[in-house]
Amino acid sequence: MDRNELKIGTALSMFTIIVSSLIQIIYTPLYMKYLGPGDYGINSLIQSIMGYMSMLNLGLGNAMLRYTVRYRAEGKIEEEKSLNGMFLIIFIVLMGVASLLTAYIYFNLGEFFGSRFTLEELAKTKIVFLIMALNVVISFPLGVFSTNISSKEKFIYQRGIKLITLVLNPIIGATLMINGYGLIAVTISTVIFAIISSIFDVFYALRLGMGIKFSGFRLYILKDIFVYSFFIFINILIDQIYWGTDRVIIGKYVGIQAIAIYSVGGIFNTLYMGFASAVSGVLFPRINRLIAEEKNQEVSDMFLKIGRLQYILLGLISSGFILFGKEFINLWVGRGYSEAYKIALWIMIPLTVPLIQSTGVSIMQAKNMHQFRSVIYFIIAILNLVLSIFLVQKVGAIGCAIATGISFILGQIIVMNIYYHKVMDLNMIIFWKNILKMSIPIMMAMIVGVGLNRYIIEADYLSFLIKVFLYTSVYSALLWFLGLNSYEKNQLYFFKK
Image (cartoon, rainbow, N blue to C red; front, side, top):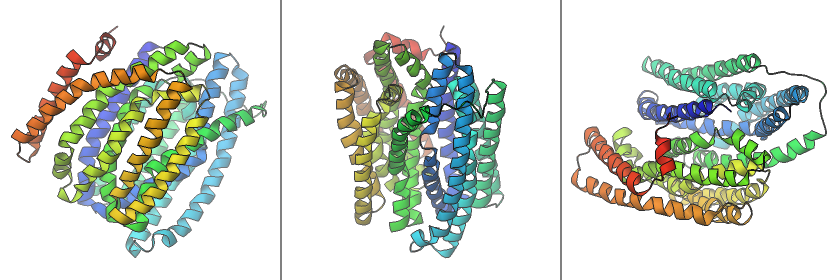
């Protein structure tokens, strides 16, 4: 692929995440002020339910990407067209299934949440659900075009569209809120932006020469596709249990206000994961090619390189949040949400390990070795679900975060690191030696951060920003001189030829 496409695409991903972070920081207090924590909790809850509906994708998007790249590499143009047509039919069928599921959930929302919701909250929840469900339903067939664009590694277009939508959507939403329009109007505007973005994908994919044939289907490959997709689907289900079920459990056993507090903590982990995926997200097609060419050493080297690069950024974010996160939340949305700090930490700290190893997931998928991970994660996800239900009734919303953190440690850290090393031939001893060596300057920087908290005690934005600036400067200097290798220093000059 064009190296500039990869570089600029990755840069746009990073810039998009930075912009997204700033928007979340600005937008969330506005949401709380003009719509209230109740509406914020409703929105977060429905987003979680939409995650379950989106699982009807069954992991077929990844399968389509994998087989499209393979057919194109082999010059099988007509087969690729038939593949596009076959997947389009499959996703149209799934759109119909999603429509039926929408009706079922709509008529059962009251029975599930009625004991903890007021009649007004329940009525608003149903309307918001229908609006968001519309977007999910039509996204199934439209996603075929987006996947085709991804297979051609057109990251500049995709990241550019995402960035434009990311900026315009909250501007319109904030305008609606400030002028007295409520949650329903804001939700409608969000869905309209998503639909417009999908329509752009359709036209751009066709402009790139995407062909569609509703004949010549190779039905015998359906078995391979569905076997491959099944384990991808299990991973999606597991992710949804980790990240979506908590809000549903809290809504059932605690209430809307607790969802709002939990969601504030969840914002930080969502952004945290976004920063980690900015680089690895554009590398999946490249990893597929390297594995197809049997360049195993290059794959192993990429795992270490990307992990170290991710740790540079995630080390700054996680250590900074440990030091200054509670103060920021109090300044940002008020002391009533201080529990969100503990919620975020319980997830963020153990989450760091699978994030800096996220390239391993792409390697497993490209090698079709992700079955073991799927089984292990499914077992751990069930444990997470059971622990969450138990702990949320004992200690409230933070119980879900504790359950998630424990699950990460058992499954995504202990078990998966053994699997990477023993089965996938990724040298985890070298990996962890590298990470521990990089952690020394990070720990030194944190000691300085503790001193900053001790001597700069004023609780205002100016003092907070001064501490963050000083800490970032110290962190960067120590890591530059004590933690980075020559390759990483060179990568910081991002557009260097």
